Length: 142
Image (tube, rainbow, N blue to C red):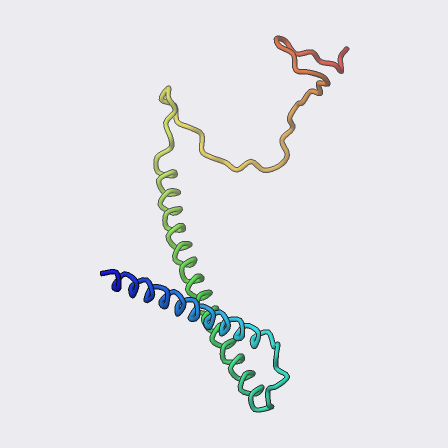
């Protein structure tokens, strides 16, 4: 029984060591790959290797641009569909508003909605100091 425990512990240690080795190799490959993408450590490359890497990068860029274009086109179609739906809803809402004027609480009909154009003048007063309770003081009048 003791031998099995020892062997299981030894196997667990080996597995952990192998997992660390695998992570190190993957990390090295990833690091090496990104260094290649950045154009680092190219001193030992031949012309053929450089041309191969260049072609590979151009193909990768082409794939990226193609996917980006596809996503943009899908987004445009989605936005067009949303616009169509909103236009239909707006037309239905407008038709309902024109057919049934809103009723006020006392039974009178509301005036039709109009856009306000032009400037609207508003009176304002200037008060300096802390706000006071009760009637306001107009400091401009004294």
